[in-house]
Image: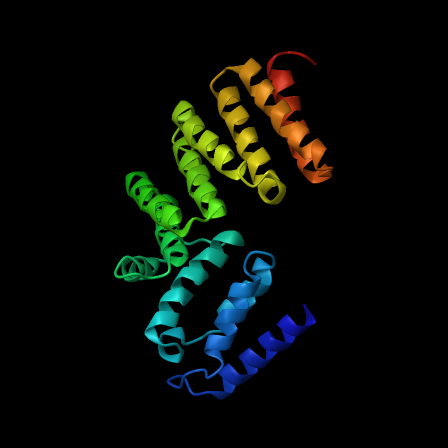
Length: 244
């Protein structure tokens, strides 16, 4: 972590010294470091992304497209608004031509969907997610496939379409179940989401069943944080059933 802050401090210092029209020679290294940190330390990755003041001039076209994807990705992870980040559509179009990286193509389409979703353009958001799913299959990345399906469920749930959302949450759960050691937390959260949809639909017994199923996974992994989350969901379900 100390290394990250040193790099960030140096970036800001160099950027201050450079004239506005001059590129940052260290820009590619900063982008690469941000990509390395984005999943585990998104806040630190955000600092590095923010330190790229002139990415369109400091990076070649290919790396600039990567930057556009990573910028929205990390903003989404740290809960910054992305409603105005429509430059991601350029990256989406770029990764849709030729034989480019299917993982980045998946992310470009997925985060384009997230931008549309934040803009409350739900039909367009779902279309982007559907395309993202195709590229995730090409990439053969279980985590990405699950991510897309789960967010399809979230998109429908946000519109009150709870029973339709269940299908996508179930798809996500089945995908994550293919790698139970690595992705058990996401599997359990998907199961919890299924339970939540049943609860919102008034099917409390089914909700309790799924919350228990998710809790069993959390207990088998001794994951106390996940156990707490699922126990709270069970508490709500029991309260709805008047099982005080």
